[in-house]
Amino acid sequence: MRNVFIITCRPGNDALCEEEVGNALYEVDPGLLLKVTRHPGVLLLYTNIELEKAFKRLKSFEYGFVERIVPLQSIVEPKEESVIKAINELLKNLEEKSLCIKVKLRGIRGLSKNLWISIARHLKQLGFSINSNSTKCIYIEGVGEVIGVSVLKNKEDRVRKGEFIDNP
Image (cartoon, rainbow, N blue to C red; front, side, top):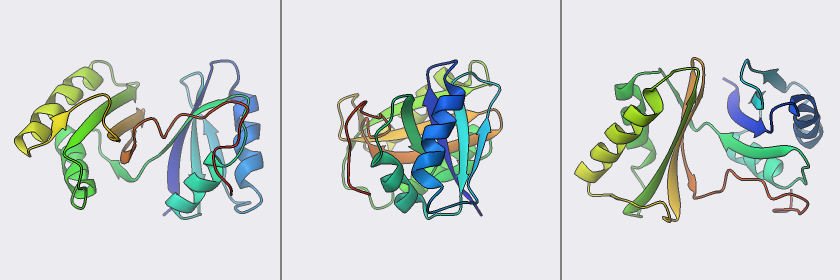
C-alpha cells in the first residue's frame, strides 16, 4: 500500500507546489504520484517510501510554494467511529496527556466542527486535556473520501519558507 500525504499551498500555485514536492521526492521514489484535487491549493501525494522517511525528506527541502505537509498515519472511512478507532491506536504509546486537535475536512460540509467536538469529548473521557499549545497534536485531514489521522508535534505540518528544516 502506498503512503499518503496531504500537501497544501496557496490556491493558484498548485503546479509550482507539485513541482517542488516532485523535486524533493522523485530522486528516491520515481514512482510517486501527485494528484491535484478539486480543492484549490490541495494536493494528494502517494509514495512507496516509508511514511516517516518520506516525511523527513520532504521536511528537509526548501520550498517557496508548499505551505503544509501532513503525513496520513492512518487512513479511515469518513465516519466518526473510524476516526476515533484510529486515534485510539495512535495514542496507545503516547505519554503526553495534553493534546491539541486540528480537523480539516474538505468536501464534507459541517463534519469538521462536529468531529472536533466528538474527539475532544472522547479524549477528555480518556484523561487527556485539550490545549492548542500542547507539544503533540492530532491532525484529522481529509479531501473528499480520503480521510487521514496523524499524531505529530504541534505545527510540525507547517513549512518554514526560505530555510532548511532538517538534513535529508
